Amino acid sequence: MSTAVVLFTRDLRLHDQPALAAAARETDEIVPLFVFDPAVLERFGVPNRVAFLLDALGDLRTSLAARGGALALRRGDVVEQTLAVAAEARANSVFLSDDVSAYARSRERRLRAACEKQRIELRPFPGVTVVPPGDLAPAGSDHYRVFTPYWRQWRSEPRRDRARVPDRLPFSQGVAPGDLPALAELGLGAASLDLPQGGETEGRRRLARWLARGVLDYGRLHDDLASDATSRLSPYLHFGCLSPLEVVERALARDGLDGNGAEQFVRQLCWRDFYAQLLSANRGRRVRTSRRAGARGGTTRRPSPPGRRAVLAIRWSMRACASSCARDSCTTAPG
Image (tube, rainbow, N blue to C red; front, side, top):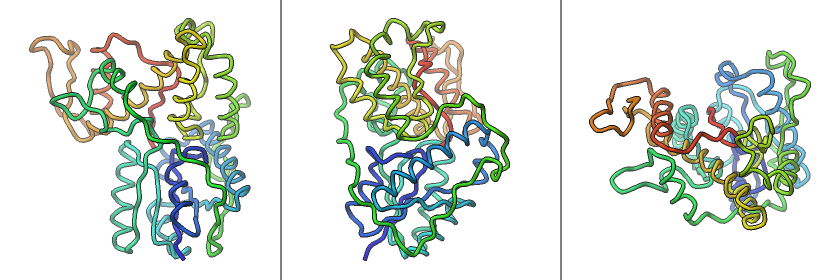
């Protein structure tokens, strides 16, 4: 009997979740796992963000249970906890979604090394972006530095098929699921009373409502701050409660029905992928930092800390591009 651990990170959903779908297709039992990493909580654990995360995990747990599964929840170092759960389940593989942040890259490197020592296969899958970072590149470079040409190629690039939702997700009986903690148990105060509910179920409800009505005027009103005419889907995209690929394809299905609202909305979603490929390509490199980006002889290079390099690359690219930054759906934060 084959068993796989599916490590959830920024992909807290069942719809179009390639890692989960592949595990369900290829193995007999599955252990969906989420690890509360103290290093992440210490740096990014503010009440509203974590409350939204807890909502998303609760919703994911309910969805898994409806298909015969469960969600294993652990606290501690993500690599140590993943290997411990794999040992409990006697798993021979770990599936997860590929990601590009410094933390995500370090996590995957450490996890791969640990899995190799235990003779466990590590299987990364797409799913955090629409087009995987590195798939698109201009002549003479391994990534795009300016958004507009990236958008043109991204718009016409063939996309992968969406992963179907598994009908059954048999959970390994040798693993204790664990409890979903409260904010106070994680050392955090109360969240805002008006915080939107997190989770895939709520995200899909909001997406359907947005595509039915809100996107119609997006091309005309998305820069009008007083109109509050944006989708408010950013946190659902950031935590992976919604598949960015599904959002793009469903929005493009509206093309021609609502003027250019859907096209303008999809363009903003493209910014997320643009940022991801910048983060992926510029990790550990020097990048252009000149205020006069593109000026003849006006660019300079200087060393900067790894996390800062990608930020500077993003700023440079946006100065060089005539388009304005999206305020709607692009969310860049650690994975």
